[in-house]
Length: 220
Image 1 (cartoon, helix red, strand yellow):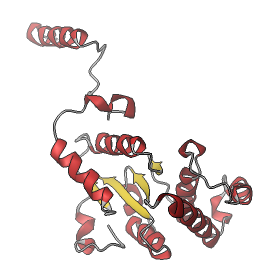
Image 2 (tube, rainbow, N blue to C red; image 1 turned 120 degrees about the horizontal axis):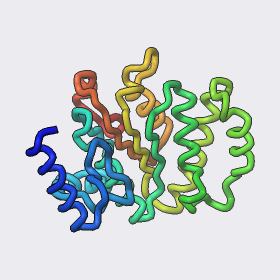
Image 3 (cartoon, helix red, strand yellow; image 1 turned 180 degrees about the vertical axis):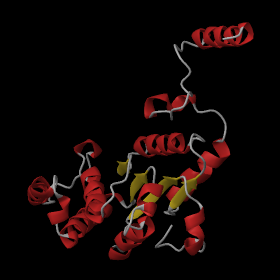
């Protein structure tokens, strides 16, 4: 290592120590919700995304690896939680239709959300989840969708705001053989009325979006 490079590293370490940081939080990893206060700039763009969610518009965030897509998702998740909005987050989307829907259902039923209606038959749903969780291929798709629909309708009557589904690395289900991410979302939205879901996805891929270049309320 040259003297000049060593000096720059030492100077950088000193600057981080002055603001109470032991390491560079922006080094090759997205910010977590606990670090989201460190986000600087792009306030107009972030506010525009928050406004779009408020308008119940589905969002697709694209860009190269490391550009900050996951950090943007973390920012939007933190904002939704601050507003007490129910969310579900798929960090790495599953590569089967049943697992995709099952993970959305599990996220919606997370008790940390604290919005599960008392009159909702959770026991029946949890029994089904326990039965099929490790082998979702045997969980009938119609039953998963039925459980999602029942929960969303109960929730929506109480809160009057959609459940937000955040999906990172969305390109993985766009590329999976026989599995099209957009079709999954459209299928779920078409089973619902009154726009009970908003999808916010981050993806590396842009070239596969051509066929969806004129999005409607039922698609991204």
